[in-house]
Length: 142
Image: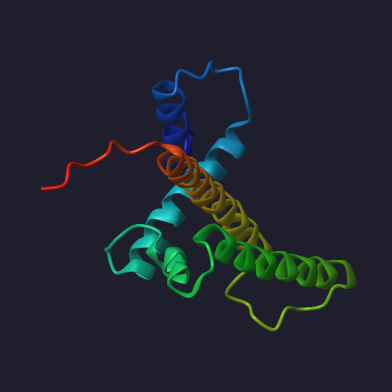
């Protein structure tokens, strides 16, 4: 019997014109979950304000937004390493409300956020360089 997630995957594949025999439905389901997680967490972190502003606020202190995401990625990688070590040694994690699966999902979302903010920064840099090289027309003095 198909689950709701199967229906979501089917809708997504149809919308994106992905042939039915391409990709893995479980991977697609995780990516849909990542989209939903990002939307909910972004709303919580920004209070429904400017999307990703919880990352770009670091720019006020001289740190590019995309670079602030890297810190969170590194935290998540450290968590994955600890959880995998616990798994291999059959130890229980001290924090039980963020299992390995959730941490991996967070990594996927943070990676997407970092890419978006990095690409925005690159576009802004290119625009700024272009404008700074542009010769401005002389103004007439009155």
